[in-house]
Length: 220
Image (cartoon, rainbow, N blue to C red; front, side):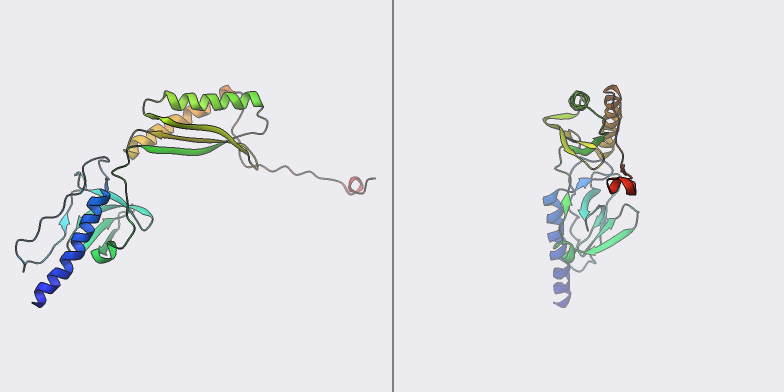
């Protein structure tokens, strides 16, 4: 009877975590966008020792989710604990009872990825140049084959401390982070060309200091 209770105590947290992972449909690490995590096979007998089921990192069952505010890979899901691989390749074992109470953010259902950044140009930029930069940025974004056309934001945002700030936000139809990195790189390089063609420059933090002599300060 005691053994049965221990098995039940290990089984219930394991199943709750498993169902939570299935509900969130954790995103695939090695092959993003692949199928969701499958449940481990039940033990052959009630007196068998529960063991974690290994997940092949290259298979669609390897998954990525957000734990402790960081992105980590789920490697094994057992009846008592779940093993999670960090980006530094260390291994964390978390009791399923504790894991079931944690906030877990998953990425499988993400059908697109967001590019969001502020771009600053120098204060020497005139209104005509600013309009050319804004139009050029939007043209670059909308010309990309992976752009999600419903939302493309390119707006003159504010007069910053050392730059005229342009807000850029757009979605790209990919759930593969490596592909998104390539897209982001292409877009930013083309932004550089747009700024150069408009005849202006990117800004960097600067401060202008006006030195006033003592005689000038006294009105002499």
